[in-house]
Length: 335
Image (cartoon, rainbow, N blue to C red):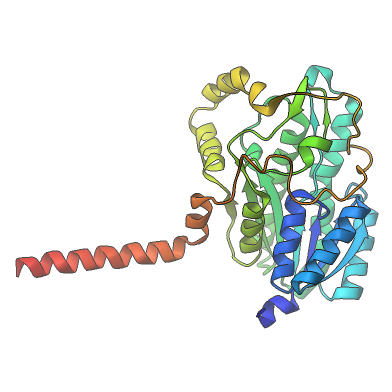
């Protein structure tokens, strides 16, 4: 049975038609939330809406390009009219181009920045416009290990994600200054098995893949749901994310050389790419693409690091109890 709290939630998810956004929409639907679904792909949006309703939630699907600030503002108005005041806003929409910098085009950098960075800014501004006067609400920025550690062949995406972190940190300081009860958090993702690797624009010789190890998007969705309901500054999802972030803090130059040697091969399969296939940089690729990509046979269903991170309070309590019991037994054996 869903809690009353969950039933009262109104949630906005950008990039909700596929991949992590789709998995996150299902997670909130499973908890009975009212979900505003924003993305460009109409087929995926309608399918996500049906899934949420089948799971016990309710939803409204609004075709939206997050690079258009006015469109986001209009969508927010519709969501509040149909579902109620927005409690949680999740900025997840992204796009990318797999290409060496020397082959990138200026308009490609602009488009990736408009969607992956400015889409977050516009979504956050729409959320703040409604949350600040009420002095409540949670904004969740979906990030990546690439926020801290850039890799070759994804310069536009990495730069945009770096920018999201800088924007979020500035806003967090302002909210603290204003003593606001509006919260903001960022969830840094590992490599996920999402459809993006078959629709993203690519100049690679072979088909793109997430850098192994690969995780299913449901792991990320559970972390986003947790982040939306707990006051955590940041959450790292999966041990590879922790390794990349900490490793970059300790030895960035070592990682530069390591990725220079391995970063091209690790992002490609052995299957040749079709340079003429459709991509979603400018327009959505037709069809319902679901949450999963083509790497189900290689993707992990569990992450012990995520479980430990999300349950660290209970783990800490258990450790204290165990230590206390050990001390008690040691003292008793001496008496």
